[in-house]
Length: 162
Image (cartoon, rainbow, N blue to C red; front, side):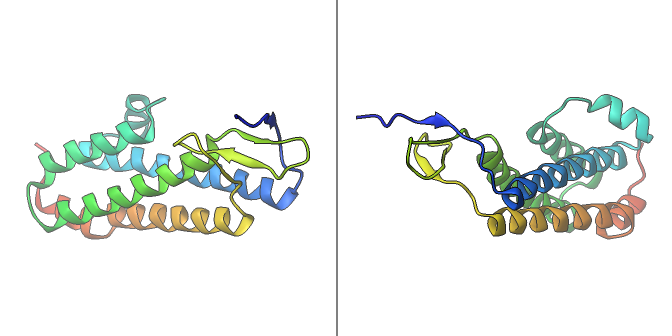
């Protein structure tokens, strides 16, 4: 028999703050994905932002992969970028599972979230959310550094946009 669940918003301010931080950090990652498209396509900031307005993470990653293959060709730089993009996908998937889950509880039960497989799972803990936020922050920095002065910038300087 299906449980009778009622919508619920946890009252734990630290947990709610951790959800908020995760959401903000993820949008920072999306911005750097947009800036990676800017770099690969040799656009200015406004062109890149206009071309990617309201485009979700998955499509941004797909566009990066396509542009990177065109600009970089096969080789180490492409593989390194694809590895970062894959880690971005995994982090976004985990973030989406947390953020896009319905949180509810039985009358006298503990809060639960409906997972992507439709099962009821525990609500993520504050440390779990903070850990994922830290991972996303690190990915954002890693991708931006690669784009501005790291392996991606070096590889693109050897293959001008034509």
